[in-house]
Image (cartoon, rainbow, N blue to C red; front, side, top):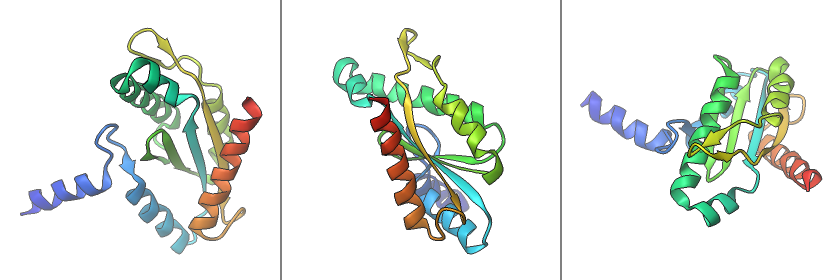
Length: 157
């Protein structure tokens, strides 16, 4: 039935914790934009010190932290772009090319994300790239965004 197909699509393309589109959805959406030659930006994000949340507060607190982060980012994005959870504490946002720098600055200035009512946000590292300016295929875009994100993470330490 149609309902069964919709349920299977949700299982395959939606992250069960956050309700965001997942890695498979991201790959399809981004490749589709590349195929249509639609310019866009990727903002690749990795939560800082996330392992310490899981190690010291437990995995349920880690889940709450991830959900609070995704809600905050979704609010910053507004109606533009799309946020995806790739896996664990890594996320990517497809965003209009001319507005990504502004969003990236707002993401980097996040301070007040609260979870469990008392714990504060530990930060996020990001790497921004744009299609077609930085690379013309998805694997190179992702690799460059990841490299820039890790450079951002190292500079913070």
